[in-house]
Image 1 (cartoon, rainbow, N blue to C red):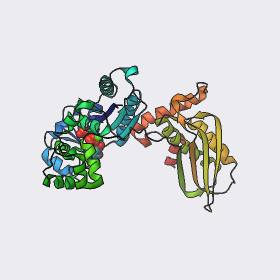
Image 2: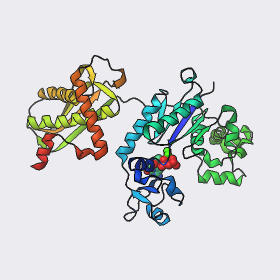
Image 3: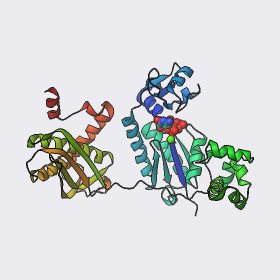
Image 4: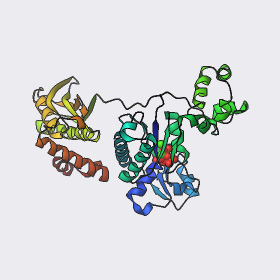
Length: 387
Ligand code: DCP
Ligand code: CA
Ligand code: CA
């Protein structure tokens, strides 16, 4: 059976996010990377306006400055790019459960068998592209093909804002004119070896009978040959579900004061709740980890009646577990949550209180994404900062 695989790759991702957040940058050359006057950093992302001047990713930023001195140079804001990346992955998951993020700005989606639900898969891929644009304001380049390798090559073909569909019976002809380097894993070394045999394009490889190619290049050659024929059976693999999330803190000085220890737990719980919230997960088991002044360690767990992502419930549970721990100086405190499940599948009879706490964490995340992690703190932290 033929599969329908979509590959999505965002255009000039970091630079486009900067242009999105700052309208003054739109239509102008934007280069995201390190400081052009200090150190020897490289270009992370160049807007298409900057590429006209020959600027591209991985180029030394000083060279980029020489080529395009009037570009706007910007330091990367990874938290923001990750936020947009999550937003894109969420959009994709509405079209298929089989979504495999391949990097911060690209993913594979398996649309095989969605015809009855969404109609023609190529139309669905176009809808995905439009929805990314509508919901994020950013353009993606999209490739549709019977497998991952061809879909990826197709998404790159008409960049930026590209859309390229390769039907099963077109795969061989689509690949034929491309240089062998278009095949993943073929680098300069192999390419120059092939060139000595008169092989420059994928079409040149296709002309060989499989057995002949195999006898020249051995087992690896067989794989290369299959790829050149457009054969790639790798499945789209959604990321493995996490079994647990944990966070711990080692203190500069051992702490015995229970009030301070409870505050530490609250901060750790905040952090865990934030991560649960970002991943849209809830947890049912809370485990407290304590390392004492003498380096001995214990863990204590409790399983809740209902799954939660509330920092209050997590910290309260951890505090109760801490109450049962000997009252000696403590070196390290940690919380881990396990028994994780997706937020969407959670039973509806959740307490109103929990929802309030969860909304607070969501607001916290929004503020921190926008203004930085330390822009908002617990009151007792501010008191301590003053001291
Ligand atoms: N990236 C980086 N350093 C690199 C390559 C990439 O930091 N050497 C980051 C910045 C990019 C993002 O990853 O915005 C995605 O990488 P891509 O290779 O997909 O490049 P772009 O999205 O910037 O451009 P294109 O439109 O060519 O995909
Ligand atoms: Ca990209
Ligand atoms: Ca990419």
